[in-house]
Length: 178
Image 1 (cartoon, one colour):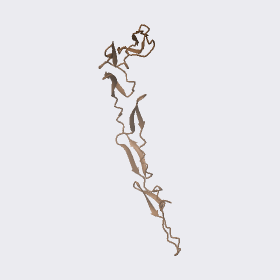
Image 2 (cartoon, rainbow, N blue to C red; image 1 turned 180 degrees about the horizontal axis):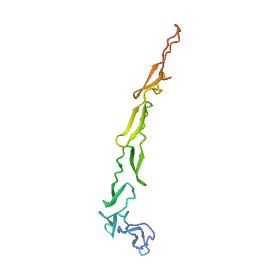
Image 3 (cartoon, rainbow, N blue to C red; image 1 turned 45 degrees about the vertical axis):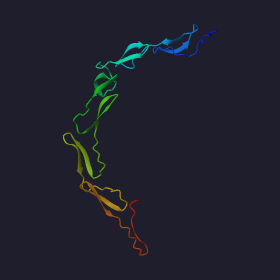
Image 4 (tube, rainbow, N blue to C red; image 1 turned 180 degrees about the vertical axis):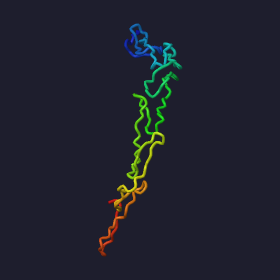
């Protein structure tokens, strides 16, 4: 019998701590040992066991940073970094409060716009948004079949358009869409 080594051919050396296993000139399968590296700061590597592979454990309770400006008191839990969420409520009803993960709390001025032309919109520090009716202001109710709109309390009240062309040979109607 002639035994010729298959040098360079892929093989499996049975060691879970090696990679790129190939047949050697002496006829044995051998791989390159690699380092077991934890994926993040909330994991620790205990090394490698040939029969089990990389041994990575969680570092629960360890202080960490999740790089989120909306969290604080970050700690490792279950292999990941988790923090408590900031309460960005500034107790000001005249702001819309949110959090940006890059910059932290954002308290944007509330415009209190109710999209009603018949109200004067303001914000009161104690009461929040206030909508004061504007009586008599000209307005458009968005209906093509009305005209001469005027605000009454917080509602636009208009008169019907007179479509009568005084021609007995026509039917006169108004199409609200046109």
